[in-house]
Length: 334
Ligand SMILES: Cc1cc2nc3c(=O)[nH]c(=O)nc-3n(C[C@H](O)[C@H](O)[C@H](O)COP(=O)(O)OP(=O)(O)OC[C@H]3O[C@@H](n4cnc5c(N)ncnc54)[C@H](O)[C@@H]3O)c2cc1C
Figure (cartoon, protein in one colour):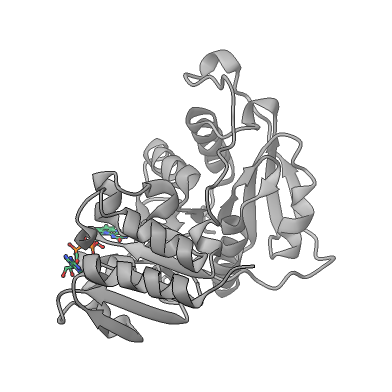
């Protein structure tokens, strides 16, 4: 009999509310579990979060490993990683997937190292092969190839998935999951991280992943001084401003909330305008579900034009102020 069994999904919660990514992972997990003839099991850590089990069952979970303790109320790297290692060693899952969120991207490699297994990060596709192995699809070499990554010798086979990339399953009201209570043997004094307070930063604009209009800037914007063009166009159109990786690395834009692409957010706006963006696959995977794509680039051969519905060839420093001015002259706000 196979020693490692079960497809596991880590369901993130913040403030007692399930993160969307956990529900998206249940869809992927459900398909793999059905193909393997295994159960789909969820790991849920938090405090006073038992009520979330119902939602997890209705979105496809067969079983929920629930660890409920005040120590787990707010995510802490060490507490969650130690506990996840304990649960894995006791129950021996075959597969464990997490969201590539700030929590998942922190937790997954810690857990993989603790249980001595591999990790495919930021996957954009999942399957199980004829040997029952998890196949994680990861864009590589600037997006020129999609690498199919397997981990044949170590368990659990671990992967993180891009948040917002996969659809949730339809909710089946009344569908139930079995609950397995996990004993928490961690003490505050064993932990190196102390929570001294938590606060919530209010977003200035709609989060880009929920915005209907996204204006994104790339390295071609040329500097923090010029970045106001991205913000001004986004403001004028009532949209949100996003970015490629280089402006985030340069500090012109915020990596956590604004980066779009394989390692960042997925956007699904009605209108996406990209300026000074070459169109690397790593960025394009995050905009592929945009309804209308407009690209502004001085290089007529820039790959982004292949992905665009409308292209404007020219210097964004001249073009964007004209668009803003024209738009403001056309639109009158009450
Ligand atoms: C593992 C991995 C993960 C990654 N994840 C991401 C990710 O999630 N998101 C992401 O975006 N990137 C990601 N990257 C980086 C990605 O590969 C590209 O390097 C990046 O997207 C390029 O950003 P860019 O288009 O802004 O810059 P560039 O490729 O440098 O393009 C700048 C463009 O601006 C144009 N330009 C220059 N001046 C002007 C001007 N005055 N007016 C108009 N156009 C002008 C140029 O013609 C050029 O096409 C990742 C890379 C790796 C290896």
